[in-house]
Image (cartoon, one colour):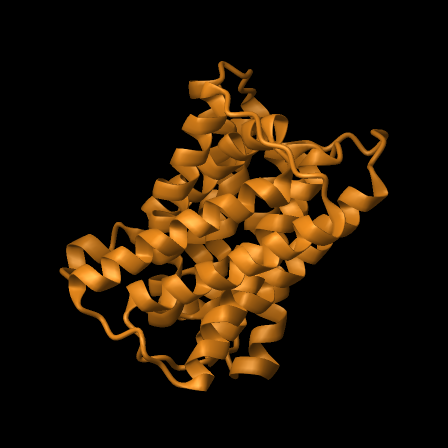
Length: 296
């Protein structure tokens, strides 16, 4: 894969991941969260299985690799996505859930030191601070609003899961091809969501046109696109630096809502986008990892 292509991965990831917040809200309007995600990942697993067969990748793996694949799926696609979708279905605003989840780079950076031996410089922490400030400015949460307790708990679980998944993926070396790794991740996610349906959910899915289009987008663009790119970025770079890309998700989601849903965009949103972008730029520079001053 050419370097020019891989350099576009962070931008593509942010765009695709941000689009999931818009399509996800439509999905939980017309279907229960765990049933919808269970169907999604059964389809995703089948898709990656077909891709692996076409590429003649080996699906026979070791027990350790199986645990890695299933575990990654449960963390990223099960607990993280399930937590966000469930929180939104319980009345949690997309803005507040996005703000809580956007703490992921902070939590990942704090844990990356003891878990992975990664150390951020003062510049790196400055970038993280700016990134979160920009994201919070865009969302502009009204503290006086009622917050559903169960939705808040689910979002916090999602935050912990996506942070743990990032560290888990970076720490666990795997020689599995992407199609095989993603296949087992989808299997793990599908098993998780279907278990949640059996235990806790009265499953309902209404096949409206918006639901079908939103689900198709999440399967193709997010599960096949964004998550594959995320795995590549984590493996090829610093866990804490990759995580800072999540700061751009709330601002970009706001821009998308303005373009696609005709939602109002304020000067505060634009300022937040600029601040978050500056923070991500600083935090992802090579000198943000180990040195206290940038290279001259």
